Image (cartoon, rainbow, N blue to C red; front, side, top):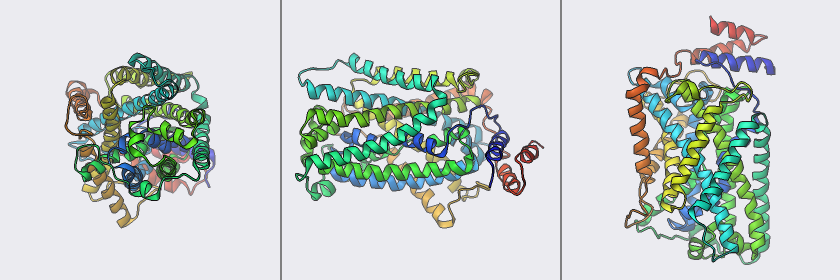
Length: 523
C-alpha cells in the first residue's frame, strides 16, 4: 500500500511529466470530491426544477423514461471519459486528451477548439444555476402573491445575489470547499429523502395512477410525437451533465488517476438512481393533471409540492431543500469553471492567458479565472433574464457544448482503434469498451442535433432555439482567436510522456519511496 506521502509525490511527479507544475493544494478527499461532483449534477434538483422542459414534450413518459435513456447513455460516456482521466489526470481534461490522441498535423487546432467549447459549456452551466434559483424564488413569490408581477430587473437582482454568494464562498473560503462539498452531498441526499417521505405521507392515499406516471404521453410542441419525445431528453441530459467536473478538479485530489475515474462514474450512477426515484415520487403525488402542472404560475415543481401537501407553507418549506442545493451547485460549478479556465489559460488558450493562469499566493486558487467566470455569468444573466426562450437556449447550449467536448476525445480514440491510451488504472475491457464508446458518441450526435431544434412549432422569434446561434458564435470566436492569437501563443498541453509516466509509476509501486519516481521522470 502506498503511504499518503508516496501518493502525493506520485501525483505531483505525474503532473510535472505531463507538462505542468502542481500549484493547487490536494485537499479534496474521495468523499468531498464526490460531494462536489454530485453537487454539480444534483440530478434530482435539476430534474425537478426543469420539469417544464419535458412535460410538454412527451409528458410523464419523457420525464421518467427519458431520464433512464439519458442515464444509460451518459454512464457509457462517463465510463469512456474515465479511461482518459485515469491515463492523463490534468485539469485540462478534454482538450488535453484530444491533444494526446489526435494526429500531429491537427493536434493544436483540435485541442484549441475543444478547450473553447468546454470553457463555454461551463460558463453556460454556471449561468443556469442562478437562473434556476431566480425562477424558483419568483415562483414562491407568485404562489403567495398571485397578482404581483416581478419585473425583469428584480429577477436579475435575485440572480446576481445568488451568483455573488457563490463567488464569495469560492474566493475567500477556498480551504473550506471540501467541507462545503461534503455538506452539499449530505444536504442533497437528506433533502431528497425528506421531500420524498413528506409528500408521499401528505398525499396518501390520493396518488396518481401508475398509467399516468409511466405511460402518460403529451405533445404540445407541434412536432411529430417521436421527435417531441426525443426533444424531451433535454431534461434528462441537463440533469446529468457536468460530470467532467472531477477532471478539472483532478489536480486537487490525492491518488488522482485511481480515485478520479471512480468519482466520475459514481456521480452519474447516483444521479440517475436518485433522479428516477424523485421524479417518480413527484408524479405520483402530482394529482395526475399534467396540463394544470405545465400551466401553473408558480412553476411545475412548486405546484406539485403544493398539490401534495395542500399547504403553501409546507410547499415553501420543502422548496428550501432544492433551493439550497442549487446554491451548493452554483458554488461547485463556479469552482470547476474557474479551474477549467485556469487550465486552458495555463496552456495559452485564452486572450490574456498569463493573467488568467495566475494562482493567488495567499488564497491558493486561480482568483483571476474565478473573477472571469463570475463576471461572465452576471453579464449573461442580464441578457437572459425574463426570456423563457433564452433560458431554454441556455440549457441546450450547456448540454450541447459539454456533450460535444465529452464525445470528441472518445470519437477520435474509436476512429484510431481504441489504441491511443496507454497504461492506466481504469480500463474498460475489450467489447465493453467499444460498446460504451459507441453508445456515448451516438447519443451525443443525436442529442446535439435535436437540442438545436426549436422547442415548438410554428417557429417564431419568441420561441426560437438560439442555442444554434450561441454554439455557432463559440465556434466562430474560437476559430478567429486561433488565427489571431492561438496559433502563435497556444502552447498546448505536453503530450509525449503521459504513458511513460504511468509505466514508471507501475514500476515504482514495487519500491519504498516516491522520490525515486520523481528522479526517474526528470531524467
